[in-house]
Image 1 (cartoon, one colour):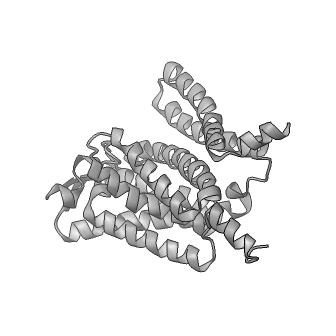
Image 2 (cartoon, helix red, strand yellow; image 1 turned 180 degrees about the vertical axis):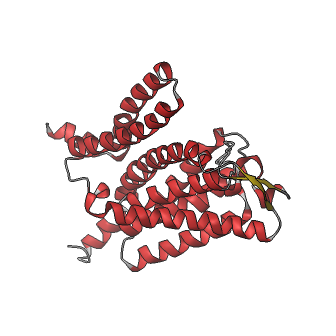
Image 3 (cartoon, rainbow, N blue to C red; image 1 turned 45 degrees about the vertical axis):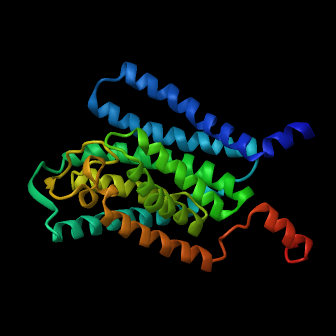
Length: 289
């Protein structure tokens, strides 16, 4: 590789495009094949797990071949512990939100669909958690942060994450704004605290699964029929409307508080990265060696 090519590959936007293409190409190929040739429900659910694995493998390949470094953000040494912590936190945050809504009489259980109903949600929750965290936090947030610093990267990745949900059923600009703040901040902060993807992947998976698979709430506009049969009664600002509980003011408050707390932990750990111009200025003054 000559110097000119190396300089081009170091440019953040180029790296983001290459990384997304590296993940999207095999994902689209296998996903298309599954949609065309697989009709069995069980096999299609297993196909979601296959796609999640493909995303992780493709991302690893990109980092090793293009960035030429160890894939520390997917370190196997920390995987189980941080994934478990994320699963616990994601389930807790959603359960607290539903608990508050139930106490207010907004969330009302009317029956149950049996435990097998949860399985239909589980596979999709795993796929969306892995895919979205790898792309938004692993690619966009991480690469932008290396150049523009943590705070600007947090704002950009959060806005993009919220905007990506505008195409979902029942989505509004207010919903997207809520997702940008409550989830965009929370998940980026989870990455910053650990500097790995497992924690934020776990939070994302557990939030989606608990919301749809257990409490049968709409997941970002997608109707779910999980373990419990339930209904939401009340104004849209409180229930989240057709978009789901994540658009509720309750979930917004719960997740935003959690995100701020994680940001405080990241700040205390010294995990906030300065933008390149601030680093250059500090280095010129001899503050950074």
